[in-house]
Length: 114
Length: 113
Image 1 (spheres, one colour):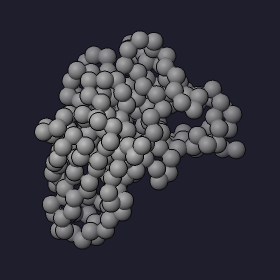
Image 2 (cartoon, helix red, strand yellow):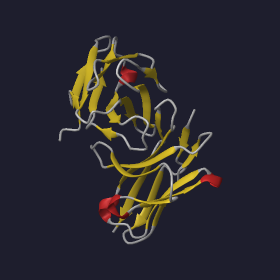
Image 3 (cartoon, chains in turn purple, cyan):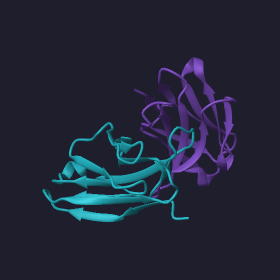
Image 4 (cartoon, rainbow over the protein chains, first blue to last red):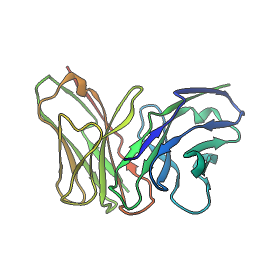
């Protein structure tokens, strides 16, 4: 069964600084990987996804993520954070050709200081 | 496009009462999901349905039942609500056998007193 770990519960960065949110997964093969963002009181919005091909994927709002098989990681990055990026970010893993189960990490809350 | 629609948006129940949370999607997706979100716990999968007529348990199924009524609708039932079921519930759908992400509803905030 697949699982996801987001090691950082809360991260604070200054506006304009770079950002990296960590995600580690556990799965026996190459999984589907996703990053979602949730603003307060809102549902979840898909930022980007990976399931094959280029290991560096681009998403919406200037985010990108890199799949590293050797490290079982799928870290989310942004070169310059904006105040509007303050939200909670979730990494998720799915199982290709498997059970259709989609499992989420516990999330990382991002605070952006002016 | 409506996407994924959940009803109701808010609900207060007394301990022991029952209720059904409704979810409908208009994207012709095969797979549908129910999650609960609690502070510090992220989203935990309650049940999912890979296709019409099939349902499977997720990480936290105890105290819940589901029905995949047809391809569009996937309901979540609490037979005897408990305070531990106070949470925000999200329904989601996505296309099966594809690397597409799931689309989420706006959530149902349930309080059990």
